Image 1 (cartoon, rainbow, N blue to C red):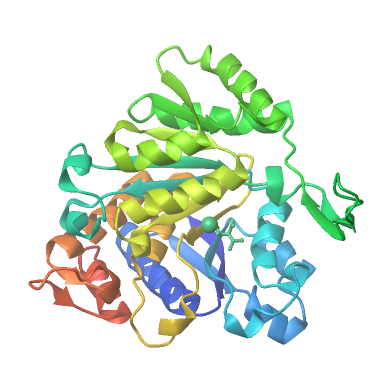
Image 2 (tube, rainbow, N blue to C red):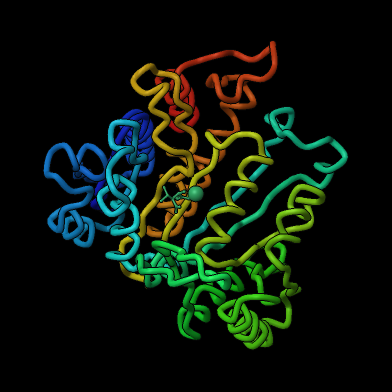
Length: 367
Ligand code: IPM
Ligand code: MG
């Protein structure tokens, strides 16, 4: 019997509904297994801009640091779209990632057997299923590099370029090493295959990325190690997704590839994520989908990604493996029983339900 303090950041749009679902499921887990989950609800994103003028206040970040773990819904919406980059709701995500030093982003992309008709890929490309763990570096690279605007000087023919904007990709050995180790450790517990993705034919930062990967790979002789250029990786991902196990990559490439991996499973509403820092520090767990303002407040959102994110929290932050398995099995059982939120209701024989009923069905399989 243990007590865990969870900072809950519902955020904007459907974030509120899906985090509510995840907390209800956690309550069911606590009733069954005898744990106590204590929630502290905090504002971040657009709602924080409205309340405090910034997407993330230093006080909110402090509260997150003091908690055992953070559960986040989604941030953003059309209301805040016209704000300059540094003041947008998404800034909250970057400040949470940077502030909590969450360098490792785990994004599992799984094709649920019950949902295979939702995948846009042909059946022949899905014969080996999809079970990929994308490991995305989260606190470095282009997202956190030096950026700005300057006078661009002149074109070769003398025409003035006007303003020039730049972003930079920088990676240090230590930053690469720690994320690559996460990848290899995960591979050891899975199918023992690791694909490192870079653009080493062009980028110096990618050449260092590859050098470090190759060095660390020697420490894991049991893991089959391969590397791809990112353009090729994005092609292979749709051609033969079943051949990948763990994919480790940079912040920017991971952002793109994880959306691609999510799309081929057919259901972004099913995809959870974990963002982890050093052992013993709070992790952050959030669905991969966004705030979906078009369906917010209508009981239409798929709560599964948020619920599965809560399961990842139990597994990765609290070491509660049995409890995490219990949630994951409950989700599968609910799908097996035919329940579908609108985003995954592809077949005529399924039972279409809303956010609240889907959540209730998942809970039924837990208690
Ligand atoms: C993601 C999102 C974020 C990112 C945005 C909202 C800042 O796309 O988590 O993948 O680019 O990291
Ligand atoms: Mg993204």
